[in-house]
Every structure is written in C-alpha cells, then in structure tokens.
Image (cartoon, rainbow, N blue to C red; front, side):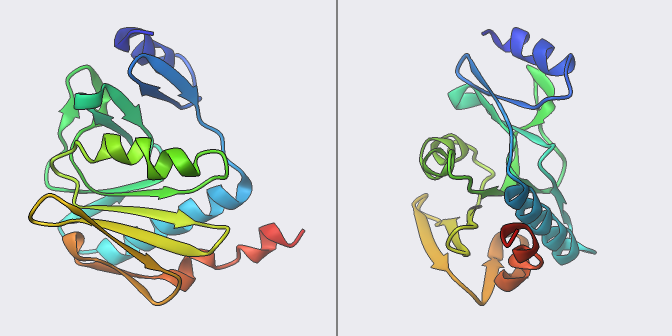
Length: 182
C-alpha cells in the first residue's frame, strides 16, 4: 500500500492502522491493556501539569520517516512545538518519550522492530515498555553517546529524566485486578 493510500484509509474509518514500509496492521487491545495504557496516560498528564512538556494518549500517531513507518504508541510526550509529517498531517515526528504497553501478540515487536523504528527519531530520549503479565517496566534511556541504557523496574519509581517526571509503578496497576480476577 502506498503512503497516500494509507492516509486515505485512515481518513475513511474510525479504526486505527499502523503502517510499516507499505504494510498496514489494524490495532486491537484486551481490556487489561486498555486499562493500563489509560493509567499510564493519566499519570503522565498529572506528572507534567505546569511543565513545558505534555502527554498525548494512544490516538497520537508517530511517524518514523527514515523507516517509512507510522505507529500509535500507547502514550507519548512532546516538548515544544509539534513537528508534523509532511506526508500525513496527523502524524507527529518529535516525541521525547514513548510508552508501549505490551500485549502477548505484540511484545516481541514492541521490544524489537518497533523500538528500532522509534530509535531513528532524533528527539526521542526515553522509551518505556510496560509488561502487565510481570507487572514490570523497562525504561530505555538514550545516553549522550547515542547508546541506549535499559533499566528494569518491578516497583518503586519510574524516573523520566528527559521530562523531569516521576511515576509510581504501583499506580500503573490500580484496579487491574478487577479485570483479571473475573
């Protein structure tokens, strides 16, 4: 599919599709995934109140022009003016932080291929992967050398130094048992 065909497809539907070098994939999520990504977004919004950066939820499309891909992260943070993709005005090119909540079917791609796409974004400073099954968080931080440092957390505080924000990891799981114990 061409980029123009992808943009037209999305304009004509309420479904969200990701685009990777000519291929499209529809997005769907389990209730647990939807709940946790909502918690991530809520916590980011609260942590950024009164600060220069702002959070967007899962409806914000991110373009990685170098890899000809468009993805919908579960949450993203932008600092400063938004840079829009010239081929799709609804796609943004300059996130500072991206968060993905893992699903069983996408975990490998989120940690591998999708992260490879995101790493091409010069603006990206931190990539966060939230694993519901293990109730853990992986934070990847870009070092001044350009290398990425991964820190795994199972509790405590997630420090997002690029946006001066701290999230309590236990807050990600609030009320999750209401969905998983049924």
